[in-house]
Image (cartoon, rainbow, N blue to C red):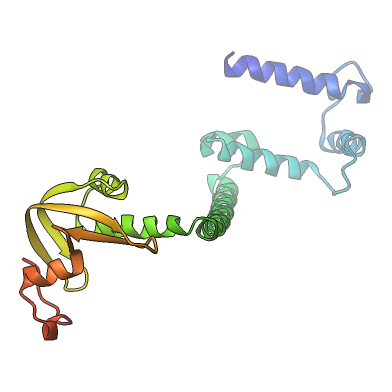
Length: 227
């Protein structure tokens, strides 16, 4: 269905809807400002509208709607009978401001919805931490493994208790340095309290980093640069 066909159908529906208000066999009778206002008042009453509406309100509403739908301002100006397009630009400014206001309201609603979703997610996580204490430990270990330099596939294997052979750089947030791992074996160990620890070649990773950086007990708090 093209735009013209839809327009004709909509027009026919409007004529049929207000047919009982016609005093003559033509749609709007003898057209002039006062006769239109008279018929408009009948339509307003029939619709139960309490707000005062004039013919000028109809012109204003149509112009604003037409511009918001993309009709060229030159066409709108001609339909309205404006001799100067500057007059029509008043409607364009109103339309632009309305679009800005609607956009701002939409963004505010989206932000509020996003914040509410975050609150709901945090509530769910808090309950999950209470019901399943190991859940939080696994999340923390997952984050640590990714920070050290393991990819998602390697991290998934580690969290499932599998050994991972690794070659490449491992990063220490504590010392802000990278250590070269040459064909090492990484494994996540769980102690009797179900706490999780990452080991490299059966050595806790914190101790492994110290050995790689050649740090003594008195130097463990010093920070260096990466390689």
